[in-house]
Image (cartoon, rainbow, N blue to C red):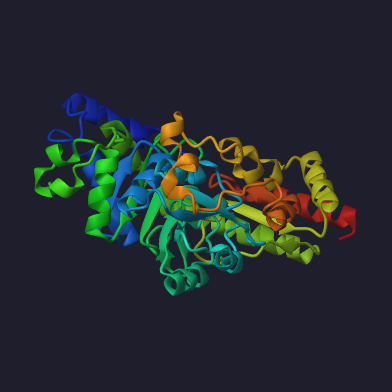
Length: 393
């Protein structure tokens, strides 16, 4: 979490005093945020949810993904990306990331099979995927594209907002994200049909609360992932500061990136340096031994680094339910056991994306923070230079 305080408290206080704490028919905070966020992204539709996971799930339902379909996901993402695919009844196929720590377009194309219907490029740690190449592959093979922007709220790619480039996009607003309401999410799309189906997945009574959206064909048995007015109020305060926060972090990142490069380090490639979130600065090393030495040196100098391979459920080798093929709470509902999925590929192993493991072992990330003063940025720059010099890189 970056910032939360008086602005959020004022909106919550006003909300409580109004007594209009239910979004449908009484409140307006969720509706307001959906309007603001869709306008900011340049899409027509936005629906708030309870989490990034439910946002991905709802978007998949909106895109009509289900049994018989494969969905390609990257080897480096929080496992909820892949679990959402299973929740929709489909099968996740894991593809390599490249040195940018995002989905490799070449490996995406290599992994496409007869049952592949969609791909979820994940803008991991605020870093945009190579969307130009991914969309080219998707068009060639007629794939649906769902952008997982859960870790890249507010970021962009070559002037376009992340989440607005594919057929749908999903966001998380939990504690660790650029904007936070503690927990929360949203999915967006330019398609009325996708929004209609996805909204029923979010709220089983969507057609009841919004009769103007009623479509008997879409009144399937949905669940309830609808957001609260409290989340809406918090996010309406948060959205006002996101642009300046990201601008500051991008500035800090560029400066420290240059510091590292001048000291002989190799910055991790970034697909859209001018528009990405700027939340994480990466350096790529020749070996995991060098990466560990650099990380150790930074810690000794008061800077906390992160090596992606050590981030638990963000690495496909730690996606235990998938590796064990436990796709649901009941065998009759388990996508891995459904007859419709017999032709889908389910040959998972810890070594299926060795290139990704190698890259995650050899990369060191540093987190940026919008409240870092110039003096702190100088300290981090000095730590980067001194550590690099001590390693004689």
